[in-house]
Length: 107
Image (cartoon, rainbow, N blue to C red; front, side, top):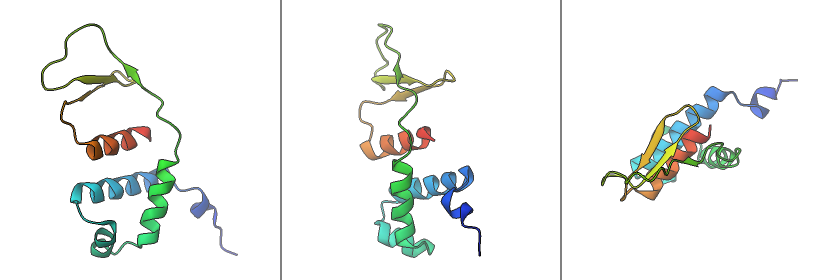
C-alpha cells in the first residue's frame, strides 16, 4: 500500500511553489482556467491549493508603527515585521497585489 503521508502533509517547499504559482496567476491577468491550461496544471489542484493556503494561520504580525511622523507622500501605511523589516503601503496600491504580498508573508 503506498504511503500517502506526503500527500497529507505537503512540504514547505511545495507550499512555496503553489504560493508562487497562485501569485503568478494573479500577476498574469489570465483567468485561472487559461493559466492552468497554458502551464498544464490541473485546474482542480489550483483551486484546492488556493483554498488550502488561504486556510493557513492568521498573520502573526500586525504591528503598525505610528510614531507621529508624517509618512512620505508615496506611502501612507507602514507595517513593521517581527524581524524589523518595514512594509510600506502606497496610497494607490492595488488590492490584489497587496493581498498577494500578505499571503506570501503569512507563510
